[in-house]
Image (cartoon, rainbow, N blue to C red; front, side, top):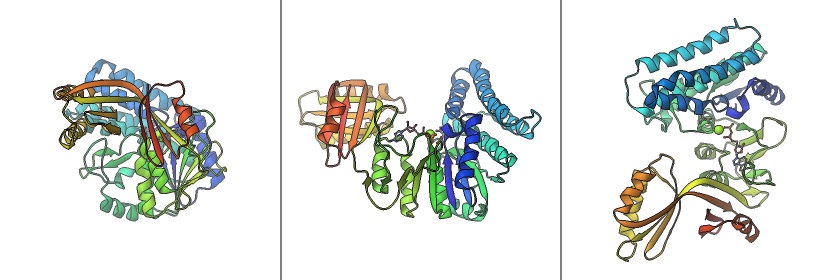
Length: 416
Ligand code: ADP
Ligand code: ASP
Ligand code: MG
């Protein structure tokens, strides 16, 4: 069995959905499980609906309209008759979601988030599955919530591997084309859960692991994994082969083309991961597998924008030692800050963090009680794997370097 994952960009409009058909016709679709994300940027649209539901009820109707119009436009581009059953199916999902919001009494944002945001994937897979059947690619639509079971840590649920393995082994017919949702799972009470933003790559890895798949292909709007994000760097180069270990490092430092959790399950069973272009499906793309670390072996650049650099020193010129450092880390953990780089000297400590959960104010308030604190909340963090002098120079040119840390294979540079 092969696992394919199509992300939001590959199903962002009717033309893109038609292109998915072309990809499947080109590379074959027997014994294939296709995992699909919400269309285009719909997950953001659902997030904004949920925000309005909690904070600004008067906007709920208009954000719902944005979602309905977006999908209706795609339906109009794919199906010739407005009496097609698909219109009713999508309407039923939307009605179900509205009914949930109307009766919901839970103040738990994360719980409500998962119940609502999941409709992005339920709708996209229903549209794709119906369209594929229509054009002769017979397939079965699977509800992934009946396959992937998780705990109830909503928005970042952890997989219950044992139950998931048994459900997948029992319920997936590997001899046909199957279509299912990325990103979603369900808890023991059958409430929808999600695996974290951009989690569909991880869904592909979970299904591949449990099905002992031959390989996984994630279809992207880029030719494969490049040595830098083409949105921010010129003259990028395609990486042909990457080892699991190297790919985990790249993803960990923030190369957003592969979700960091994806690689571990694949590595455990040595299932190759291909990253390929949905525009040019016959091109080789990138293969992540056992073997050469990196081919070609060239510097790889990763940038994370909008990071926060905090510098601390003691109020009384005493040393920053284990005790203070452990206290600082406890606070970083408490406020869910992702630590990118740290650097310390006798009386100072600097840390570059990702303020994903908007807790910076609270963290600073807490730190100021103990330390002299300075911070800059709009820095960029560059990581270069397999760096050389020229690579470092290219980053430092015309920028203020605020912090720099060199390791054997990796350099990290914080700039303003
Ligand atoms: P999808 O969600 O549709 O699967 P993403 O948008 O998450 O796709 O990922 C594809 C995007 O990742 C590319 O358009 C590119 O801008 C970005 N990207 C970041 N780093 C890299 C990299 N090293 N190589 C290729 N693309 C990268
Ligand atoms: N639709 C989800 C998101 O945008 C999951 C994914 O696309 O991977 O985060
Ligand atoms: Mg994505």
